[in-house]
Length: 93
View 1: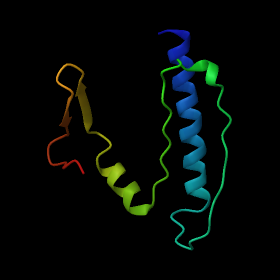
View 2 (view 1 turned 120 degrees about the horizontal axis):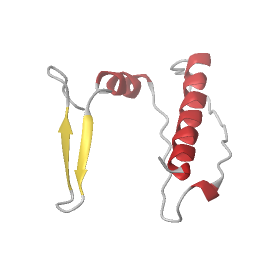
View 3 (view 1 turned 135 degrees about the vertical axis):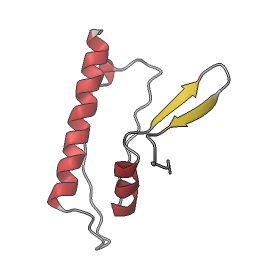
View 4 (view 1 turned 60 degrees about the vertical axis):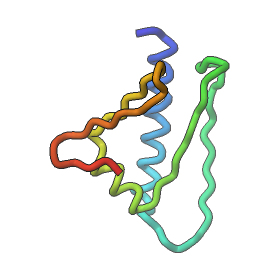
């Protein structure tokens, strides 16, 4: 593995851990309060063409993500199509 790939994977794990910690502290709050947090990211670890996307999920979205965690989405660059592969009995949403 290249150093850049290892660095990017580490960064992804760090951000995921941070967000998981946030959901444990106040799981699925429906109070309507605004929550603000910031994560410093060294842009030098990514290529200039890279995109970083962050998603904040509510309880329903989290449940869907948990139920489809073992599904894989495969993107074919040539045909620009996606195929979804899930274990038996799991329906991708």
